[in-house]
Image 1 (cartoon, rainbow, N blue to C red):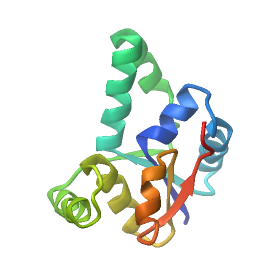
Image 2 (image 1 turned 90 degrees about the vertical axis):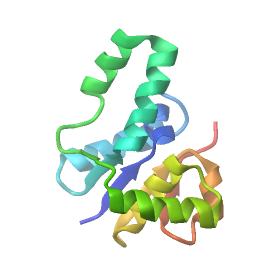
Image 3 (image 1 turned 180 degrees about the vertical axis):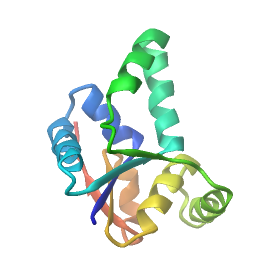
Image 4 (image 1 turned 90 degrees about the horizontal axis):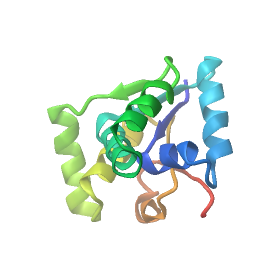
Length: 136
């Protein structure tokens, strides 16, 4: 089954109703219907949490995080093995560690698609399937 991996930029675009929000909403709907899986790495989830807390405060952060992802989605923990693989990607391809975690997750299965608004992934889109949300 196809799986969509959201990075922090994609989820924040959805939360903020910015360019690409409708596409993320479509992906969430497909996930709820059981036609695809949806996941986000714990590292990316933490980036979303930090961004929300900084901009909106703790109460709003908690409210949004408790309701934004459908129950059918998964937050994928960062294992030691995943961390080592991501570190290799980070070093070999000059990505941030958080981005390397998201990319590694997309690389783990050929039917995974990383959904992002971060065009910095253009330099590594030979490694995985990546869907880019529109620029702002």
